[in-house]
Length: 575
Image 1 (tube, one colour):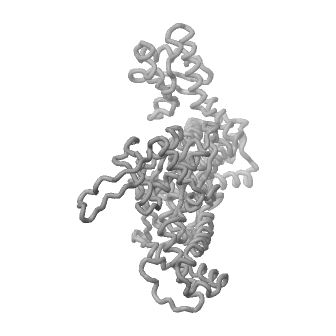
Image 2: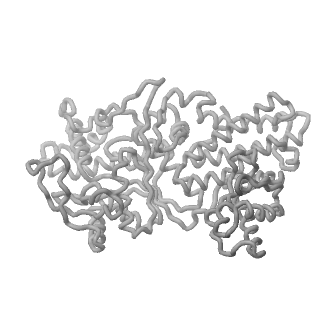
Image 3: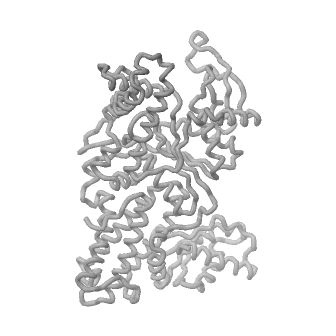
């Protein structure tokens, strides 16, 4: 258990004792009780709201209940003091031995420190990236890919079973365009001068190898053949090549999915039809006519009966068509069927979408609520696009023009770890600038460098102490650690709570923020030794104090490694 869970239990025991004494009722709801770090560290080590949330149902004044609780908690193991603040908040200070015990817990658990069973028994399907299979990955896809992958790792660390899924949009007009573009490159590979790529086709060079492969495999069989003879084949072949390229691009970021689901297969296997039948049976799909669009007249708009989903029952502003007038599935209809399929094997669904899809969130949430009778929790995390800069100047991207900056090019220039860490330095729904020059600067203003430098500094210190003094980390004399070291331990002990809160809020950037704070605290402690020789980690005339501070430094390094691992970033051992 974390420090916070341990003392939540202590609060529970105190409440049980008050109940046994007849001071409060036995059945008070405790679901809103919280034990957490106080906003102001000078107030203590832990803050508890128990008296504030239980006073009314207990029929007492908050301050009176706080007094009774404080009396019980002062006798609890490890509690140094309890103070009452304001109308009834409790501030606890813990004995030094509690924090030293937590330092040993970090060492004992090692790579597992920060992991918990909070989500045990809950399967979460998280779908991320899902870029159209029409070309290599570019930086427009990168942020969602990193956020989704890091969130999956955080959820696993919090005890959930996670399914990482990629939805392949291999049905619809964009893959027909891909097939036609591949056919053009196929003819080029057979010696035809194709000239400039026609408007509307994909002009990128990435399709040249596909055209060459198709030419080698099929010869000139489809050069003058009608489109109806080759479109389906070329679509399948081109999509396969694009997905192989996409997998390779994602691998450069250390991203690997458990499942690739095909939209085309969804329709071929009748799963979309099954979803429609299920919803019709429950009266949630009906045949109707959409309202006349604003600004349209009967001269330029013809009412057509379509199958409509009753999304207005779930908060949407109008019912939505699931099929077009020609019988083809709408994007929403296909998405509905896809989520229907996902919900069969997961307790919770999370989608990572680009912010440009914000308009469809309400309706797809309505669909999932309908399909699962509200039993499957569903969350959509929107990710803002990344603005690429170089020295403050914009770097242009355009998929159709073929001049976009690929993910592979960015990783090659600045490295996987820099890309991944940078993508998590802001909330996913906040705008982000990625400046090629700034992200590799050796400056405390660069969070990637600052955190990595803290870990490298720790590793260097451990090596130096062993080489020059023969001293290694030891917990034999931890009582030699003073107030400054205790504050560092208290911050380190928050890591398990940060992981659980990041999982609960679906916000992996909290890990990066926390590591930034921990790195800053370690650097501050290190710099303290520059002004006060008695606070240096390596004390050449005092092996026992050195060993204790090395032990502290080693555990700070352990937590940095654990946090970086959740972000998919390797910890630097030298810089």
